[in-house]
Image (cartoon, rainbow, N blue to C red):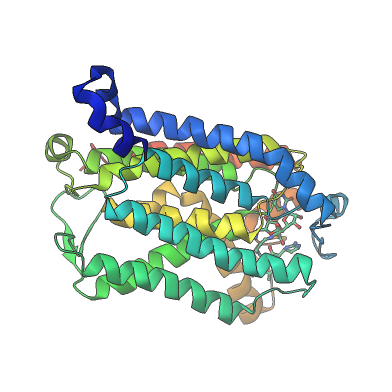
Length: 358
Ligand code: 57M
């Protein structure tokens, strides 16, 4: 909005020219989202407490989690508001990719909200049925996939990390591929969200990596120099990623151990989904497996655990997702969390190196 209101005035006031720059608007998108979540945080937490929207803790989990019973959840609402508001304030609103990523954020946010609402307000122990929740996620992702695949000028080729000449054209199957990436990312982040700060830290790291990727992919000169696909307009997603970083930092303030609020599905589903959409639009779809490698490890630990238990009647881990395994091994919660953050940072750095290593 500021871009549309203030940049046109640069002919009279030269300093307003600065609103043209994505870098400038990204920095202020980070700060705006951070301030919004700082300001909203205490009010939302008090409101959730007043409504008794507290987490019920399952008995079969690690014993240390029983003391978390009643911690307000659905704090993801503060992330949703901060990301959307800051993006609307700082992004170029004529850019269709901005609206697509906002659609994903709000769409997945509504699915998460509904699930949380059933679980913590209506006290239905399982929330939305898995099939229904998955169906709605596929629906939102399919709308985005179809919009992109039919978008003039948007390539349906995918980029393979480390290989500069390997571009595979998926044609209409591209929409299905988008569903896999976006729904997969959304659910992987959801599975990871099981310790204080565990999901939000790597989200900040991954959003930072994709902020850089989206910016360079949207800049013809840099994209040509790096031999990566140029995506006209994807640079604006750096502003969105900035808003995501700011909102997540603000949430981490409250979610840091010992957490005063959990994000709930209303936070985890849209954060993962939005990351998937940014990966797709910036034409670095498969790189998400490395950027978000920690989320992939968490999801794989569940797949292996369930497969092994069903086929052999034996567990691979003491408990899945893998963060519970380390808790049961006796690591303190903050130790698991910080060590997982370190892994996420290393994976993001490796991912960024693929911009050069190709
Ligand atoms: C969400 N939710 C947390 C909070 C958060 C298939 C199976 C592996 C699914 C998995 C599952 O249900 N995962 C989805 C995980 C829950 O957190 C809430 O959920 C929101 C995210 N959706 O925002 O509202 C609990 O996590 C803890 N927490 C924190 N700090 C935070 O900042 O401490 C969350 C955020 C909270 C709190 O204790 O209550 C969750 O873990 O439920 N299921 C599991 O993860 C279960 N694993 C399991 O059943 N493993 C079996 C299977 C794979 C065969 C096995 O290994 O044998 C564990 N979940 C729980 N207890 N709660 C098992 C034990």
